[in-house]
Image (cartoon, rainbow, N blue to C red; front, top):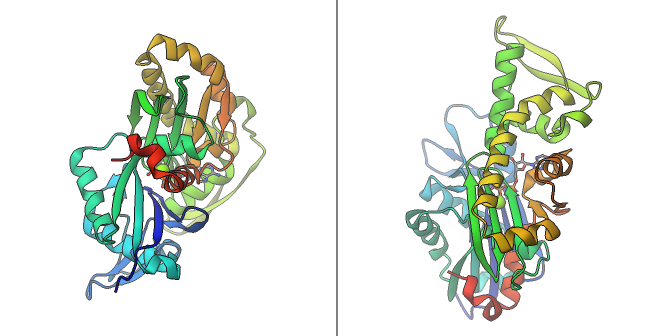
Length: 337
Ligand SMILES: Nc1ncnc2c1ncn2[C@@H]1O[C@H](COP(=O)(O)OP(=O)(O)OP(=O)(O)O)[C@@H](O)[C@H]1O
Ligand SMILES: [Mg+2]
């Protein structure tokens, strides 16, 4: 039952991770996954607990990732997941209902995809519900002054989508996106093992390899740093191991990273000349989970010849930016949808 609505909530409903914040604190950060019992249709697990069960479930338990390419692909599951996560994160003040609820949405989203997100948010009956474009929120979360006319280039390489925007005067002056991000990189690694090592590995193992050994600049990728990988030998059908080096993983990541670079190139080409001039001074601000990949700053700097700033809190920028807006919604009214 709702009494007075006093809580404010910032939502970053990401392809891979969902983060919830109030104006001051991170309340929850968990994988965007749920496990549903196919017979009873009950949710068996959500977030961290569901992620731990991924690729280990039996046939009655169905793992669901309700987002693909950064947008909602299964509205009903996304709704159930959000309800469970908000309940899990809630403090007593939030349980009284929300005054402001603001959620991020990729810049590259259709009206139908926005509508699907609104449907999910409407279940919380907040007094004011708004959407904000994620790259703008990420820029605020990185502490950039986006209200001034000087152009800022923001690159967000997340789990399902990479978005590149040039921001000026609180708006987007140039934009490009590509559905190449975490999921694609993990699948590339999985395919590579199948093709070159005749080893089947799970997507979680592929992701872990990317996080531990991922490097995107070949000159600094070591061929002696590496580790054993466990999987199933495709010819023998039995458990097996292979040794893989950082240099090998870096060769696998090269092709998807070229696609990401071409996306950055296109947004620079679309950028008005005065703003492009600014970018030589202000540089590029990289955020999202893959900002943390080894060699990323070196690679982008060599190619684009502008300063590259890697966000030290790359998984948090969008949610921090939305929390910043929650503190002064009136000041950011022009950005809220
Ligand atoms: N240290 C790391 N090195 C490389 N990749 C990482 C690291 N930490 C996280 N990742 C990857 O970052 C991705 C998640 O990033 P992020 O949380 O920014 O995505 P998201 O917001 O859920 O997705 P999207 O923005 O596309 O909706 C995952 O694919 C994860 O494997
Ligand atoms: Mg994101």
